Image 1 (tube, rainbow, N blue to C red):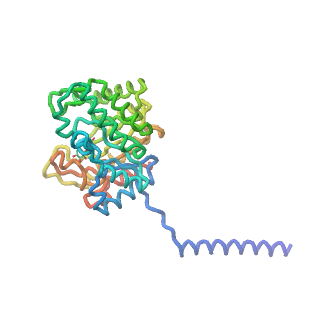
Image 2: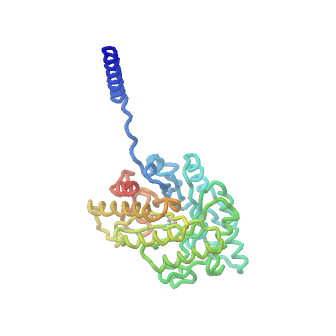
Image 3: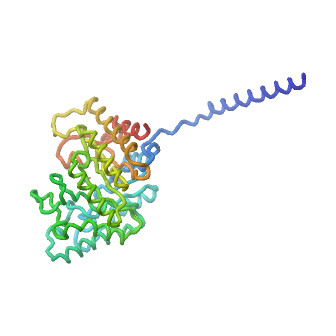
Length: 365
Ligand code: XIL
């Protein structure tokens, strides 16, 4: 009996020593929890549009990108005017730089874009030729670029912004000439399907997306996009997903965001929030101050988008959320719309804004 007790005491003592030793170890060698980042929190890839000059020259830019994101989209380096400035003369240097950067850092690469009615060089805008000459120009561009990046890009925005805002029809010879599409004018309404086929033939493993804006505020346009992609899918055209650009502002109706994501998810295709930014100065007020109230409104909108995306799009269809750049210093909005604005999760000094914390919260609700 006494022997058993003594043995029992010994055991207790042994465990006490073990516990004390363990706790001492923790104190002397604390291993802090790594801070949550966008990419470590999101259950899907977190992407950013990136530009090659900043990747080459700005350490703080590269630092934030590598910490927070695991997918990239080229901001402008793969658009037609950049890649094929003259007919048959291809300039892949800047796109290649971004692709190599992504490969080196094990990031997903989303190509943007093969066919768009904007970012066209003069030789395309002034091109004179019959239908077959136009088809040849179109096919050659798609096949050359898709073949050049074959095996290196995970996915492509094959056709960008083909639908009109006012009536959901295909852009063609629109009232405002800048809004028209030379592709539709010269190639007929089924050019979109052929763009996907040419891209697929050149790079059979790349996932192919239709990408457009306004799907959260324009129901007619949204329905037209749903009809377009459903038709492609039903015909066996190799389309894998739809990009909802989401260039929105703090007054965008959240109900439209939810409805857009729901309807896109119902197509069964992958859904990519492909160019997210949230403008705080949509009315172009030159005297606007980015008050705490505005910062918080923007933050809760970022949170809402991440939460709604997770709740609405089935996991297998979540291609990810991509912000269009990530710092206010690099946003396209101030120069494009000629106004001051602060649309992104990081401020102009690459510091996290309330918007960043809203997005992070929405990713892990
Ligand atoms: C923007 C780029 O960020 C700018 O650098 C360029 O001057 C204009 O285009 N929708 C798109 C993107 O699909 O390609 C656009 O990118 C933003 C709107």
